[in-house]
Length: 210
Image 1: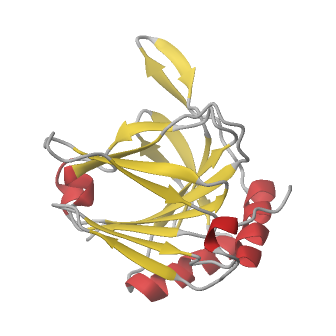
Image 2: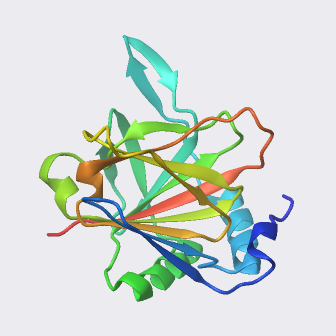
């Protein structure tokens, strides 16, 4: 797999932190959280070593493929229920533990599971949604790491039409932290694109209060 460049970052590995002022949300972007060398190595390792799964969802009585490949990792090896599909929970790998521990030093929590998404090209996507359900959305931490091609991460408020949609480009090696009631108040998506783009691997490390 070709290595990914970060020309828009002027060939610097300096971490840049941006806090977004959004009502009812706590969102912080760390650019270059992982170096270019780390990011390219981790992308290739994850692409090759992850047991990617093609999940399906039932829409109007018809089985339809998710427009991306996925894999769950966590502290316990067992089957879990996620949306309308059965997913196998895999044991942490050394690469995932390396990524997890780097993030945990920043947010000072211990993540218990991680969802990996493999966006093979611009046709792969995820539609508007909120992670978790009910009261779980009120206080959670999701750490989203991107390796590979830059894709826009779009956010819109669940009810306030006076607030504009926000687009955050998530580049190779970036970390996006969503904390507090972000999932309760904001939806997010990765849109499709007709542009020819390289693959992207996204990891969402998750923490919920006991």
